[in-house]
Image 1 (cartoon, one colour):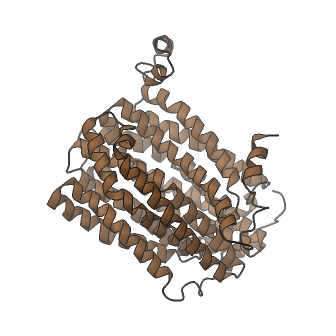
Image 2: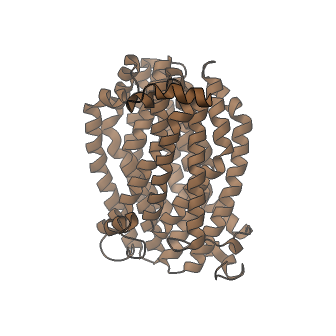
Image 3: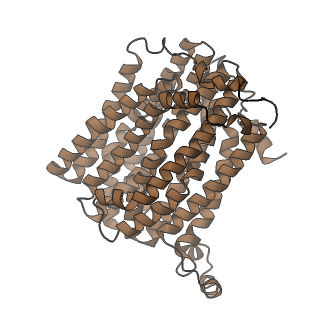
Length: 498
């Protein structure tokens, strides 16, 4: 019995999991558990970088605190392609129209590659100029620039893999992407310490009890590591290999949605639909990324210890919010498939169930974080000042985590219904109109504690806004299957094997 056989005995495959019939809890949980694991593995990329660079130096840790928001910003700009593709695949799958689902997936891959190539070029050329706007210190700026140049060159692989995850999720297959992600993360973890430290002073040898071996390897290779640039190389290489595996899986079509080379010729009608659904989704993702980048302008006014604490705190958030993100993605898929099947009342119940689960679960996790804030931060750094500041950040925000879950849950429903503009509006209101001004005035009035308080207040307000908007008006009744998105499917050639 293979590893996959064991996993599929636990997790339902897409063919066994009917998202449009039966109860709500079982299919949503079966869909979301592999998504949670996949998201945990995805965040492990960032946590591995944060951990090893924290061992490298406080300056490297502060540098990655600037680099991560810039990375998220680049990905967020192209996120609309991924969300639109996932929504369309889900709706056509729910409507039992596999030909249109395949065409949507094929077109999405092509436009994702084109978008990421363009954005990667922008990121490479203007990385230094963008960083200068954030007011990074002189010793941090060249490190962040080096990281961003490598990452921008490999953006097509990074984003291409994320699109693979989204398309498979839209179809309802969350197990296959989880397995591919696992292999990619293991590779990244193995590469990180060697590419960051080289062999001289590599702490991994100490952890493994192999002190002395690094000297021999250094003498044999002469490789002294690339610091923060090495972390970027490890991530890009791992994602590139994962994207190649994802493409092979989709071209074969034996697991999840299928793509076909004959259907990848750019279709302007499909591009229009991508823009229509995807632009608000990009705005939503960009608002999230931009809010972090704008907060860096405020954070840069404080000492390096506050910058490092901010970076660690946001990394901890990325782990804690994984259940919310996974449930949001699961709700997005179930909402899309049920709207495709004409079952709007079931789609509505899915959203309310997911929001309740997230409110209770994340509030509980927040209580744990509140009580163990200092030990959690100390995992990433031994600097006492950074630990103290990071713990304060977590204590201000921890008990509001449940409201973030509510906001994420209902935003997933809006996206699955194709109402990406509503999800974008909630994100912009919460993060731009509310959080940033509060953080600015809070920083002026009470220092870094004012920034941390702005996170908590805006999160609570965002959850309330999402709940009220979902229950207001008849927006769900107007949701419909986007049948026009695959008009080229019948005229783009054979739907047989390529």
